[in-house]
Image 1 (cartoon, helix red, strand yellow):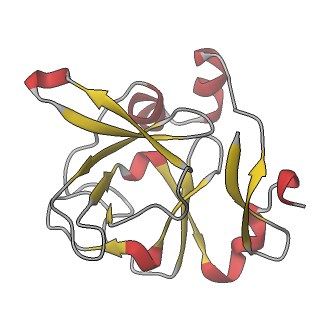
Image 2 (cartoon, rainbow, N blue to C red; image 1 turned 135 degrees about the vertical axis):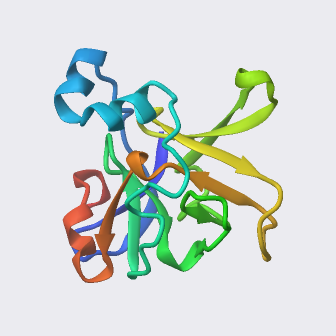
Image 3 (cartoon, rainbow, N blue to C red; image 1 turned 180 degrees about the vertical axis):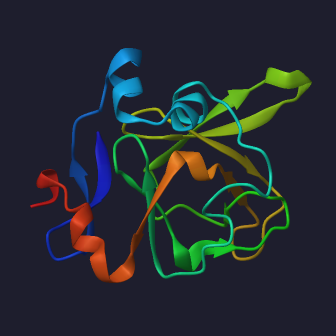
Length: 159
């Protein structure tokens, strides 16, 4: 698969070829907290206004809690008032995929990590300019890295 990744200099590069991350539920449970597993692997939703990253205003990158794929940048984050971190676009086209979600008596568009298929949240068409989209994401599905430490997200495939 072709994704955008960080190199050792903390630069987003790509698209580059990288493999999917596939693990068993038992392996995911060893790597994640029970809350992270429920949301990211079990397609759960954290309670609104409770996520640890909702009010984060630092500059940096939000990556997948399961596989560290860069997903969103703080520059695309906005206050939606919905109770979950919201972004108007992903960090790179292709790093986030979508699927139709008809659960809970609704028709929504689920957003997933392109590398490991982790559940992130949903995308809605009520966001700000320039995209008009609101990527509504669970904090439990994300890991934040400060701008000055982006080299920590370096992926061997990016070199």
